[in-house]
Length: 267
Image (cartoon, helix red, strand yellow):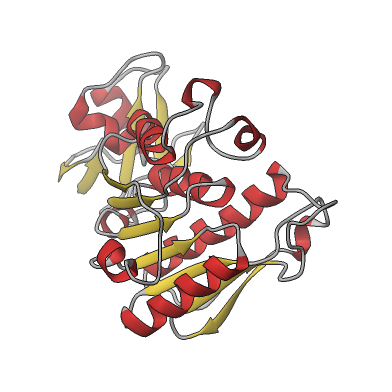
């Protein structure tokens, strides 16, 4: 039968997952069948995807990517690899969105921010002490290269204005709005909807503090606009930004991006 084994699609006579393991590895290897790590043998079906991962061994480049994506749903990776997603603002939302999309195998990311990494960023943003003083674009690109070297990462160290939105973001299918200030959020959303027709935008509103996680949700506001958050909890004096709710909202945004890339437009 035709199977995809460690990223290579070809015909096999094996009938079960463990027979494949015996053919290409040994009994201590991890076996992942159609996105699920199995502990007992299973029969195989036509077009199944199976990954055999030796413990403690660095695979070659031709196998590493397939092993990284082995826990995904079957046949999702081909579509995500074609995706082109821009992230406007690389703070608590944007930096974590970028990392999640990189781990998910989205093929091309654009990182846009003008700022440097500073100490107060470390409470919720995907940076480390070694990044202090670096442009966020460069620091985040370095991280992504260590997570997934198989995607294209473009960086633009610039402040987003109404005048440069089209220049910065043209050619990208989806834009994640990840700014801190309401005025900048509204500017980007309105400009994209007006000047980049057909581009989807996934924005955020309301994620400060430590109120219930269950208040954060994703809403489809109009055809090309999705907004994630609780829609009320803005950051202000006495209500700061805490890592858990920021990352929950970032997760909502990243998941909506994946759904859109897979052709699912409902929330």
